[in-house]
Image (tube, rainbow over all chains, first blue to last red; front, side, top):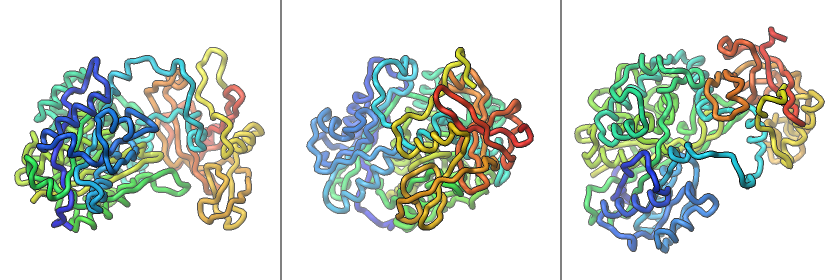
Length: 397
Length: 141
């Protein structure tokens, strides 16, 4: 229910650098955790639940981080579902706190994806992963990450007449917000973006095709980075430094190739209604939409699946800058600049929660006046093949 | 089709008991799919259990290898040398006439002309010891 006061986000930190040197992903996680606890007015000893996607310690998610941070949590959750992991973590923290298994949950993320991409890869060392049937059917064809999303975009255009210009609107809106966020501008500079300015749909459709129909500016950046989020029960939340941002509802789902599946429909079509129902709210109640923007098509399809508009009408819905923070008629989209223009170290889901909290605290650089409700929707994996989705509804007092 | 000078594409890795029979049949130029002996459901990609009922006996069938492009993209940038050397590369989800959907490459001289709904036919390419089912536009056969 919108009146639920079980668990709230009380501490946030987004690691400010997008290009690091001599810093490890585990250090980014630890430093972000310290700053997020400080933001809440809490300390290490308050943490009794640890959430870790295993991005730095595959196979031992949560365990190595507990040791590294010197924590003895009573709840450990190593759910690792790509970029959506942190919405899953928030959902699970809400449940653990509701069951009184935990009072203070810590979520951390760290990545040096940008720096790693410059290191030689594919040399030395045995492959430890075993082949899967799906991998054996797909890897010979070399489908790229972008290609997977491009298959969805191509089908969406075919079924609904969606245009490249309509997809571009999403990149235009996120850049509009990024240019108001000094950390995003610094990111664009650090990553040597060519034109650091507001862009037009023509800029997007005029950029080179990477995988038809997706252009360069339909794609997120690759950065270093990370962050942390602290979630606490109602009693702890009342004593923290900022206005609590309550977790009001959550939903989870997976999507994967099936013989007759409509690939324009994401797992969000399942997770969204569950989350909204639990919160007792509707899409039109949302002031803020933090939607995982790995690519423009990701946002378009998810907006439809969450019910902001009917399936297939996303193109018309996003047109004309409707989702800018200073325009009426729809929620403000990815007001930090998103993965398209601010921060995407590979698993962006944590930043969706962080910017939603900034908005509901009144601290965003593209602040929506009196923002009360936000939706954060994480999408992990690849939309055209297999992916995970989690929807979180957030609200303030 | 890979010559000695072209870098090799990644190939299926074995042992992997679900897909091994599929690729064994590919070596005989048979594109195959499974149905459940109990409920008749089509199962693809290959498995050893039915994804509709709980039966674990499946039957192999040969496909005619003809179908429609469900979705297609032309990759114009790639990090793997085997694909980078051949760009642009068209890949697609193909709905086979028997009712299963598979992911593959569309071999064509004009990738940009490929369209959703276009008919395609299986064609076989060799990569080392492995034979892979790709597709080609039906009119080019």
